[in-house]
Length: 507
Image (cartoon, rainbow, N blue to C red; front, side, top):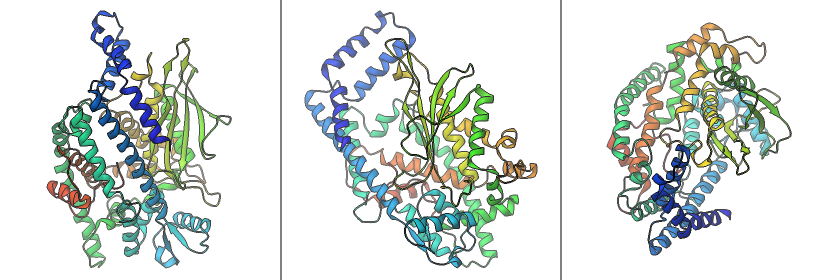
């Protein structure tokens, strides 16, 4: 209900001729105003914001743009609601223990607990959330069930039901074309990228293709190695996309003598969190004090006061770990508010959230993370650090990084997770408290680039698909599945890998 009102409110601000005239007048006289660098940058950003929002258009075109904005807002909301409904609706029920052969006991307990909460005692329930489907695909021997759960994940929004997103995808793409055209750009990609470091779609595609070819070569080598294992076991089939995780885990054991289940006891969630805080303290002098009197939107959320090196207040951090019904999938960092100086000279400090979808505790057992989940927490915390440190006299220029720069702080912080000095601090056995053995640390370091062909190809495929969608210079009708197929054939994507984000569940 609030989405149309918010869109209308933004339109009234961004297309207000009186407000834009004032900003434009200042902008045209900026060289005469004796502005300091922050003031100049803030004025330039606001002027550009208004231009890109259509403030300089004719009144007739403004009305057209308002309608486009409203339609896009409503369609994006519907897309997200459909995706959430699809994710919540899909539940794969397993009736017997034999079908779960190979799955670690902790994941079996989690599936049994979910089934009980849904009134299905004695059964096991699996969902398209990562803590559920990733371990299932890694370890369960039943290939048919692996395929069923995998397709439950990748087919969200593409099931020809009331939550289908295919038609919405086409409508959004065409409206974005229309919006770009009215603002003077050839394509929506041109419109978005002009304010980023890459500047042009050609630069982006060229960069992606430079990585694509060597990554695809490595992925094919990885596939051949896994097929060899399957053939040696007498599998009798050609590997498909839903087989990758299962045989990759076998290949990891063969190449590095490392089983991810050996690592998890050393990755208790609270210990990994303390590892984040340790790195932030060593690098930046930050300290984190847990709070109990700050209002939260869910009882699972932890809050911390973040203090700077001199013990002054820096920010409030919210940590929201567990997956739950109605929560969007994935992991992300958000700013509930940023830093700014107030008119009376006081300061408003950042409120930053780090949100994940880690497993929920079961039977009073601690949450033990996979290595991927531990890295994810370090990654998202890198974004949080960026949010803590953003400073400036004006909130418009605090943390205003280009979209193709915004991942740098998180990528840097992610790399600290595997440093032996850091691992020795947080990677401790959840029962004995003993640190991770040095030989296990070495195996983990040695395998840190394992399966990188697959992981690189699947996310670059998603990026190339996104660029294909937004390279459209004219509105047209779309068959979404055919479009995806043709886009991926253009770049030679192998059948055993699909883009990490399909069109119907990533907008």
